[in-house]
Amino acid sequence: MASANRNTPMRRAKYGLMQHLPGELGQKYRRKLRKLVDTPKAEAAFREALAGATGKICIDLGANLGQHTRTMAAHAAKVYAFEPDPWTAAELRTRLSDMPNVEVIEAAAGTEDGTFPLYRTACFDSDPVEQSQSSSLMAQKRNIDTTSAVNVRVMDFPAFLEGLDADIALIKMDIEGAEVPLLEALFDHPVKYRIGHLFVETHESRIPDLLPRTDALRARAARMERPHVNMDWK
Image 1 (cartoon, helix red, strand yellow):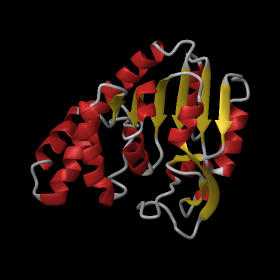
Image 2 (image 1 turned 180 degrees about the vertical axis):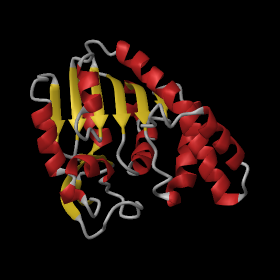
Image 3 (image 1 turned 90 degrees about the vertical axis):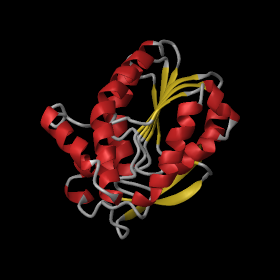
């Protein structure tokens, strides 16, 4: 999340100038500027979507330690919180033990069932609370250590949605680069029409190879009537 003290007029002005640089550097600052401008709008849209989630299902993909899971649970009848890392999932269960409408699913959301390596940062063991936010299924992510991996369960997420007996009011997706293949599959699946709102954090700054596919997904999302897709989550 971009903190308030970083979203300053001076920073906006800097990014506004730097975005005109040629090539990848200009693209980098265009993305940074968009985050500064659009993240507050995404947060407001998230609150508005939650207000309409009363009595419905919400899903937190990449729940981590449950900050947003808890917010969802205050509105929804049921929240499914996906967290694949075994240390983080155990901590999540402890922190949300007072929320009976939350079900923690110790798995990553993907396009097929299976077991895959989840890459942690090199300093995960020294500060798992902080470092757990960066764990990823994507080996090319810049801030992970490919020698620090744990095997985790991955679930076919479109199939999971098909198996639910109700529509889904809101999905928050922060899965450290794996959002790209998942969104590509989800946008092609008819179950998408059962989703009201989808809020996505993208990670092309950490995985530059994903930029063209992320931009294509943004363009496609802008043309979709359902779900309402916001790809400027924190």
